[in-house]
Length: 269
Image (cartoon, rainbow, N blue to C red; front, side):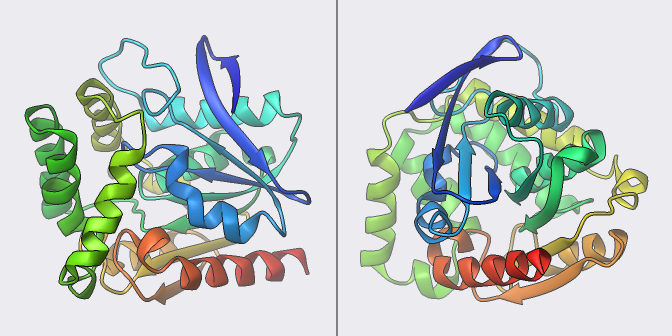
């Protein structure tokens, strides 16, 4: 495990593999450990960098009313600075996709390509209601109930949720992580999401790096329509739908990794 003081707080980060740098940015309340299957599949080909966003995992939780996506993008740039990486391929999942876009907008010279996964430029009322529900209820539930009942219905496909063994194994793995996300952190990241929503449409159109917009066909949180809008905003972005729901990095990780590797290999050519 590695740590560095960046932008005034201590960050936890990890690197694995060799080759071109590949930065993975997490979603709401998600620690770097959520990239387990991507680190496994991508590190034989790339130098994979993961880190805990501010407030989550082993990274400090500074006092604030919100953690704006712009601030978290600056954090990501600081991680690259610390590692001496001038430019990286960037993959962002969900909220991590908004941070990745902010990184490309604020620090365009740092981004070689973007894979924007289950993310959005402007969510609808149903999506915003889900975020506000998590912000309101997170502190009222124990860690297992948060994951099993508050998150899982939004993350996984009906077929996955109909299999008790798969559900229990996924819950067990989540609960084994020793640094559960605190309500204050989810509130601050969630507020950053609400502030991002719909605010960067003009700037997203200025992104010029090769971009993949990837979404699960059964995503019922950041629905495929969001990705279609996003792909239309970014010049020459590729839109790809694959199996899975919002949590396809876990449920359908092999298909996810294949899609990302195919895109990255095409960028290298």
